[in-house]
Length: 277
Image (cartoon, rainbow, N blue to C red; front, top):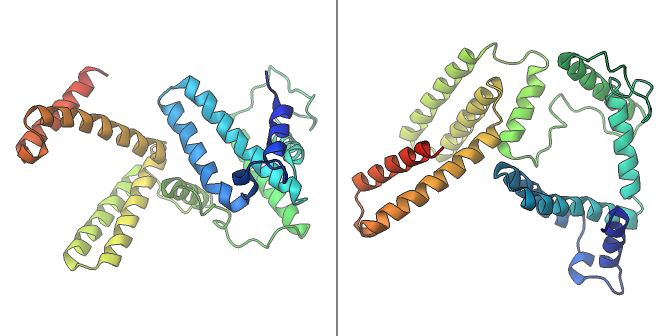
């Protein structure tokens, strides 16, 4: 079986200036990024479909992205895969003192003592905060630009909304319960309806965004992952619509279909889905 060293060698061959692949040779950090995001989504898709053979393949594709970045970093004398692994393992040990009490990979905690999840989470955040402070003190990082400054802009919108909300919640800027969130959703929905009547497209976009942000808040308070929820809804819609397509085609096609037939087929799709779940 091929191993990690073989993959590293393969990557070096692909980037060999004389004998490598023309496509791989012209890539840089920025050009690879869209592929990395796509591979991450394909991993998520395989997991949600419980397609384990496909997941194995997609994890390989995602790993290749890391190896690719490492090779470019090595060529530019910035970092390499070995240094990435070194920093990762050191960080994991540092952030898990409840697993590695002596601060090294070999140390183990007493198996009779089970750390509490809340304590572990609080300790994790405290360690991250100290890491950030030390990094800033060393001059290797820009001064702090605010509590939300390190939430990546490239995250999917719903995921970034959750991270922003969690950061704000950590200092008490949050609704106390779900009831407050529901009130906010009703308020935002009313504002959307008002902008629909006004005809101001930019204002409508803003209000729809606010409504989505509020619904994301509801998902967070309910401990629901909004990205996972919307992907599930997308999949259900696709499955139901494919059922509707079959029904409509049997009745003469879309050009002949009435709104009543479409609604009837949609309800039949929901019933079929429930009966077979």
